[in-house]
Amino acid sequence: MLKDVVDVLADPIDGSALRGADDYSRLVSASGHSFDVAKQGYVTLSAGSGLNHEGDSLEMVTSREVFLSQGHFAPFVESVTEHVCHAAAATGAAEPVILEVGAGTGYYLSHTLDSIESSRGVGIDISVPAAKRLAKSHPRVGAVVADVWEGLPLIDASVSAIEVVFAPRNPAEFARVLVPGGEVVCLIASRGHLDELRAPLGILGVEEGKLERMLEQASGHLELAADPTQVEFTMRLDRASIAAQVGMSPSAHHVEPSTLRQRLEKLPDFMDVTARGTLVRMRKL
Ligand SMILES: C[S@@+](CC[C@H](N)C(=O)[O-])C[C@H]1O[C@@H](n2cnc3c(N)ncnc32)[C@H](O)[C@@H]1O
Image (cartoon, rainbow, N blue to C red; front, side, top):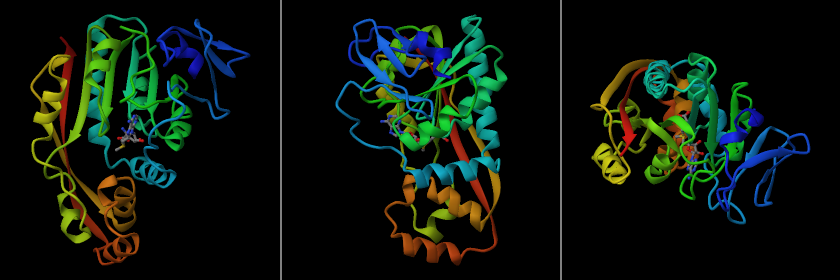
């Protein structure tokens, strides 16, 4: 809940500390700004008059929830959690704060919190439908709607570890909010991810040089904490799971929905599909 993490949240306008007011129906800052807490339990922390884009739609969030609940990405969630556990333990914090950026439904963050006793989590996503799920994903999660490009509404040096799974990154802000010795654990898609689906469905592949671009973007703020590792496994997916996977992914949005439906209908009942990601650990310079 938000009240468990309010001590690390910051006013997005001036960075001052926030506290709950009126039985946590609002968060107010030392400088007098007020942010309403939605009845679903999330708060929007934005400096502007509104967010510039919406992130994942309700349909995408629902597809994501369906797909992830079937456990197809279990090796990804295990791997991210294992590395975040190490990173959080290394900081020596008694009640480590774990931040997930682009947290979606909270699938990864809630798994991590279950694995680290007395940890607390902040999940940030720009999508309101995602934040509604996120707020209910775990008793120790505080859900925040914010744009990672605009900045992170968090106090300096307040977070032990940051996890980012297939979501946007802001290295300068990551470095600002991490405690000394804290780490960012990123999972990015690698070439070959979901390849068996690409030709039959006409969806986009993973572009070349993704890891190199990420490291370049991080330079001056973060450095590699370990050699990047590959996480790869095969998923046996039925047609409904494939439809859910496609529905949660922006890579399919350039295909006309009726064309996509026809292509999905032509697939076999089951397919073996490769999942392949690169896990990257970075620490602040
Ligand atoms: C591919 S999804 C991954 C969600 C989650 N990490 C998972 O793997 O289940 C990317 C997420 O990033 C969010 N997102 C996109 N742009 C964002 C931004 N500028 N700031 C914060 N979140 C953003 C989307 O709304 C979406 O939930």
